Image 1: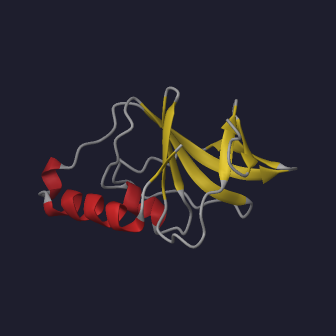
Image 2 (image 1 turned 45 degrees about the horizontal axis):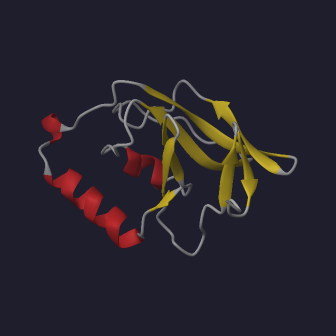
Amino acid sequence: MCKLSAKLIFAIITTILAEPSFAAPQAKVENCGWLVAKQDALVPQPDSSLKPSDPAPLSKPPPQAKAAYCERDTIMTYIGDERVLKLGLPLVIRSGEREGVLEVNPTVLFNFHRVGERYLPGKDNK
């Protein structure tokens, strides 16, 4: 799992925001939702109205959400990802077997590892 530092996230977002708004790209494929607590793991709860790269208003996270996730055709970040981060949740970007986590507050890390479609607490012991 790729962890990005707050400085790197700020640099990415600053670079993206410096581009003209008409040039803001959208993901070609973007299936998003929430990672919600269920028993001892986080499980995906799809949400068709959570599309960060679309300028339409975002849906609100359910109370049990610990993170948002987006399945994309690429592991790229988009300008709208900042809107998800402003909700106070990490954003897990997945593309095939690759994934990365965007977090705003490095003192509250997304400390989970993926096993199938579930995220278990702690780091992967591989």
